[in-house]
Length: 115
Length: 108
Image (cartoon, rainbow over all chains, first blue to last red; front, side, top):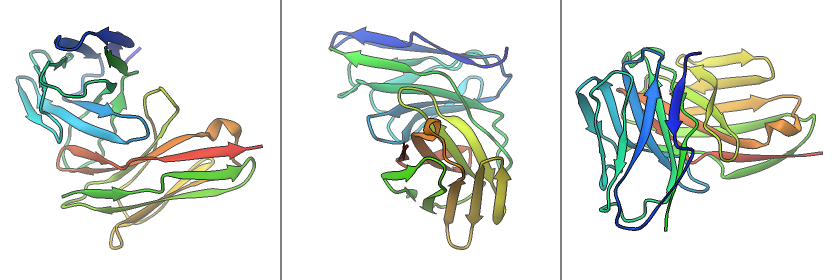
């Protein structure tokens, strides 16, 4: 079965600790994305990557970091510099073909709660 | 900047038809997507428009007018399971810009 997996589904961390959220896809997609969603809000882009070993900041990158060492994997680290990290985090992937049909497929999400 | 507007919340009756509007102002445009999102879950793809006009897919249809920066999602024969948030997203130069979503409440 092709798809995107995120783990864990729920994550609790103490304030001041860094935490890494996992995202893996077996769809052979070039592009991968991380979004943050707060209650009653839409999705805001944190980081995205169009190709291995390359990534760009989205609209709310401060306090976050990513890596793209493999095509299948795009982990997100929430650092202690992120002021309000409690949120629902969604990973997505797409074929990445600019200017043409480019549906995004989403993982199930990770709900991060910082205590 | 990029601006995408949707109504915050709508209520409709089971069996009825509802139209959810989306207006956008973006620096470029490569397509518009509609997603459905149930509470606590990931968004799922509903429809895609890149040319003006209506796209129909079963009980769901989506319309696009690029000159007006306007789209709508039409849901027919509403069912209770259609209670969810509906997200409008514009695809532009490798990025997706999402509206805040419209929460649809379907009542018996």
